[in-house]
Length: 415
View 1 (tube, rainbow, N blue to C red):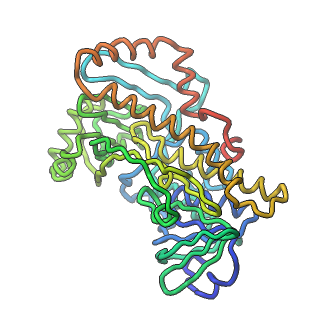
View 2 (view 1 turned 90 degrees about the horizontal axis):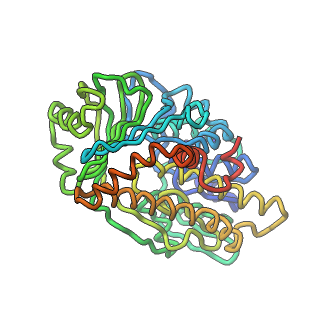
View 3 (view 1 turned 135 degrees about the horizontal axis):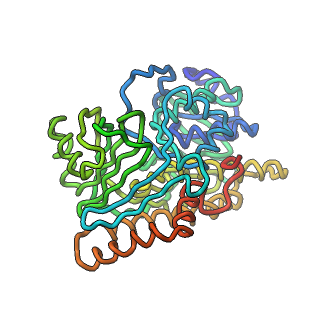
């Protein structure tokens, strides 16, 4: 497989088993997992990631808090070693509190006999670790820099047209092209949206006190603020603000931004002493009306987006990928010649849609409960957080569900 191969003859030479549109974390997982099952895969991506690694490179603004299920998926794809050789950080504890009262709850991996509660990993590191395996896989071809111009779903296959008059035929198209999915639109699938009227300001900062391998989350009337533990005194931040404050937060000097972060965190880790790059984006919940058409399927952000306050977006997408891999590979192993037909793909949709809905609405419930400083909500929170902290069976169940999954996991997510 040559990631820089742009030959029209190579791309058009056969009917591909699978064409994955999008080579980010979820799309790369689908491509690699299906290739490992013997499918011939073509993956289309605008730009290949830089697979070289320099440990002195500044930490990236976008990170994910990987669950044990996501860790297992990467291990089973032999991609975890690519994460380990780059940069990642295990967190053992989570501490949640609010600004309106002294109510708080503390989660510790020791309470459920686990070594940690997950890993904070830069998104670019995850993608590169997957691509390490993709670029040497003889069942994957990568097309870099192509633009999809047309998608036609036929009774027995899918046809794609790319720029430069390239025409492709495949048994299955996987739309892994993000929240503003072009493939979703071309497949005629609508999307339900809810604007949270919030933005997430993300980046990386160094604090005067160590993070103690802990993720700290403080709820305020404007929205939550979180420190996600990374190396030494460094933490990734997620600061949720009303959308109208997004440009204000980005326009602040590093010195003033550091002061604002220190205040937003309640000085939990002392003073912010250094600020790396930062960015911001508006928060919108999206859910595709369907995940599937005949010979077409959506995964990850192309199918659903969720409020990121619990860091579940990438984890949900990786579970989508694992469930899809298992669904179509089992169908083909059972001698189902039309393994990409609608009735097969609906098995994947039934498997994943309910779990994604539960997480979406759970995050909205937290957002609703903590968003406003009003007497009724204040009283509920003052009682709820201490109860959750003291009710160890419930707390341990919540940690286990968050870490290991809420339902029967795909084989790829198990060890």
